[in-house]
Length: 149
Image 1 (cartoon, rainbow, N blue to C red):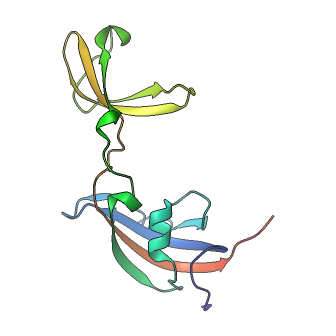
Image 2 (image 1 turned 90 degrees about the horizontal axis):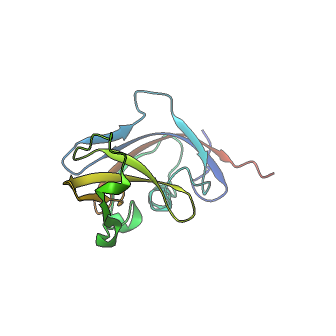
């Protein structure tokens, strides 16, 4: 075991779990292979990374990540009404259906069907976890200096 603390310039191997405050499991790798990434490489949201800075190998921590440090606040402007005519007539719509859209830059953007009728489909482009507190549990398995290329 090294005395290297997790932070910028480190590569970390860890187990994690994401839960809602009521205990509902969103994702976990405690029963799978651990994740390995370099701090700051974008594999973990910055707010989650900062919450575990300073931890060392063998440490475990559970922290509540607020929306502003996690998946953001819900934005009412991200709920759009789209004419039903812009959807394939064969598409069987249902509430909760996740569809893929392209934004102005042709980047794929997922949206969730909230409601629909014969004229309009209401689609929510907010991240499904936006506006939610996330309980982040982490177990640090290994920390090493990041390889700089």
